[in-house]
Image (tube, rainbow over all chains, first blue to last red; front, side):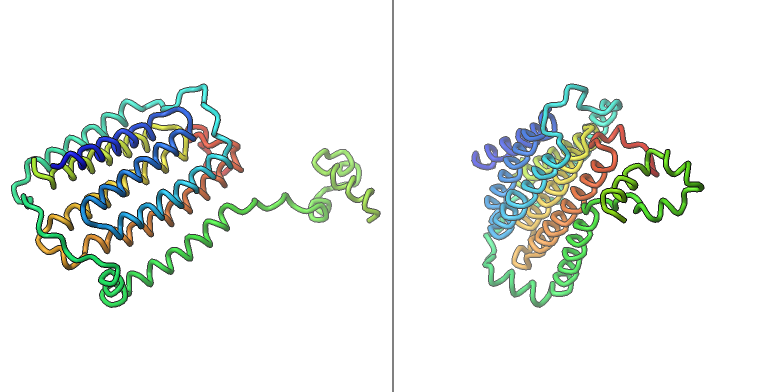
Length: 198
Length: 103
C-alpha cells in the first residue's frame, strides 16, 4: 500500500467519523464534504478519473449543498443542548462493530482475492460514452426517468401543505349562526368578510 | 495485506461508521448523511474490485458506480424533501419525537 493511499484513507475515515459524531449539524455537513472529497481522491488513486470527478460534481457540489439547505430549512443549525444520540445507541454501536468485524474478517481471510494490480485500463471519456450509448443504454434511460420522477416528487413533497379548509366550506358545516359566531376557529373568516365587504 | 484488502478494509470501516451514525443519531438529517456514507462505501468496493479484478477493460464496476451515484443523488433529493415536509408538520427534525402515523 502506498503512503498516499494511507494518508487519504485516514483523512477520509476521520472526516466520516467526525461527520457522524459532532454536535453541530453544520460542522457535520462540512466534515461530510471532506470525507466525500477524500473518497473522490481514492477513486483518482485507483485510476477511475471519470468517477472521481463525477463524485466531486455530484456529492461535493450538489448533495452537500442540499444537506446544508435542509439544515437551514429545518432550523437545526444551533448546537443541540439535549442528548444527540437515541436512547438505544449502545446497541447501534455494537451492531455496527459486529458488521465491521465480519466484513474485515472476510476481507482479510479471503484466499481468492487478486494480489497484484493489473496494468491500468484505458478509461477515456470516449470509452465510457461509447459503453453508455451501446451496452448500457437501457439503464441510462431508466436512470433518466428515475431522476425526472425523483425531482418532480421531491418538489411536490416539499411544497407547502394545503391551507386549511376555505371559509365558505367551513361555514356550511357549522350547525347554527350563534355557534358560528363564537367559534374561535372561524373568527378570521368573519374578519375577512367584514373587511372585504363580501 | 494487499492493496485490495486495504481498500476493502477502508470501505468496511466507512460502512460501519455510516451505519452507526444512521441508527444512533436523533436528527433525521444525520441519518440521511449516514446512508450516504454507506452508499459511498459500496461504491468504493465496486471501484476497488473493478481496478484489481481480472478484466478491467470492460469498465463494468465503473458503470455500476456511475449509475449508483445518480441513484444516490435522487435519493438524497427525495429524502431531504421528506425531512423538510416532516419538519413543517411536526416542527421538529428529531426522529424520537416523530411517533404518530397519522398526524
